[in-house]
Image (cartoon, rainbow over all chains, first blue to last red; front, side, top):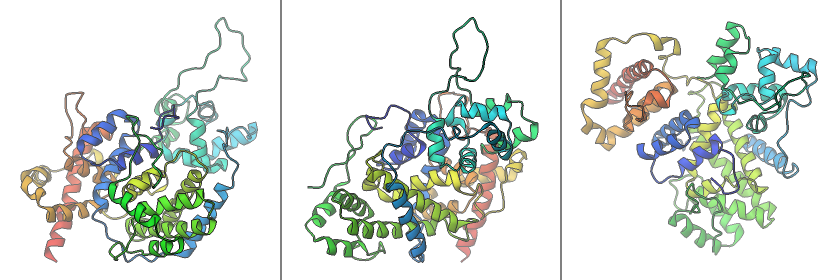
Amino acid sequence: MTVEQHSRPSEEEVLLAFSVEPKHDRKTLEQYLREYPEHAEALAACSIELMVDATRGGATAVTSEDAIDRAWQRFQSVVSLPDDVPVVNPFATLNPIAFKSLAKKLNINNLLLIRLRDRAIDATTIPQRFVQGIATELGATADTLMAYLRGSPAMVSGHSFRSTTKPAVTEQISFEKAVETSQLTQAQQDALKALQD
Amino acid sequence: MPEPLKRKKRDGTPYERPPEIEDWLKKLEAVEGAERIRQFATLSKKSVGHVPSEVLVYFLRRAWADAKQGDFEKIFRIVMKRIEQSLCSVISDSRMVGAKDIREEIMDRFAERIAKDCKGRAGLLDFYEIRFNQAFAAFRTSALRQIGPSVVDTVPLGTDEEDGLEISAEVEVAAAAFLSGDPSKLDDPAFRLELTAAIDSLPDDQKQVIGLLLQGFQIDSKDKDVMTIARILRCDERTVRNRRDRACKALKVILQKENAQ
């Protein structure tokens, strides 16, 4: 996308680039699907929205000043934030009790939450609704949390042991794999897998 | 001269606005600020003098760059009004549970994007100067995937639990005939418009399958290099067929009703 960006573009960026293509035919969609397989479902949904959008009417809608005032306030609050806010770890402020309590609220166990915190899970495979749920509990926005989760996996810290090999960052695993291997109950696993649809 | 866009395409070339938008910009740059804003206020697309939203985004960004706070707020509110109007038709109260909250959340998120753009980050608003409605449809799609209800509350068919059930052979045949039996019918613009509007009322999972079929994708293939619907939606080909069959059944009912009116 832009020259200054090195990481993979977000779903929103990919969909925006697709939306301004001169044609949204099968060929264009296929090109995007091959280039951004991680956003396949979003691209398919977007292509269909673009197809049906043209048939929608809606000149009769009554707009409300309240919603526009609210959007203006949101604009003002975001624009007044300091520039270049670095990617923050939204889990950093949690003490061990708050950490356990968060896991309980999300109906997961500590192991899965630790894997999320340590970015041991590939962010592109985490269901958006789950990210939104964690963000709400953390009092952060989904964007902030996603920006953090997209970072490189952390070196496992806080463990004290001797090893003959140099500690290294482990490879990220998919959300599905993490759910299956985090010692969750079957009900918890089912609930998390249901979020993937 | 209007400022060129900063964002670059995948091949490294810069994005450009369509010529008709450039013409609008040149024309309106010669107009005095207050008069320009008066022209922006024409809401209905059908009205004479309706200024395209792409042009509004350009002048919104310019007002910020020129520190014209008053003009900026006025244009911001007009853009938001247009957005709210478009959202009301897509996310109507009769179509989705909690539609009002969803519309407001999407508007808030868009206000955030404008704020980030003002602060010089990402430059995502470039897309809205090229094809505003399409870009906003993309933004809305992405936002709805995060915050929208999982099922559009219209056709009470096609829950996930039903995906494993077999559809009768009759429906299967009817579905195939509907989608591929008479291709010339799909070339008829009036029928296609009617069909597209009917597709819009389907639950999302069925809408995706039918939309992809209409674009020419096949359900499944033994050839791993072929991009199929089952691969795109990451589900079993039987699930895709079931969704298709259910969708065809629902579409038939909708279209028959339409034609009976």
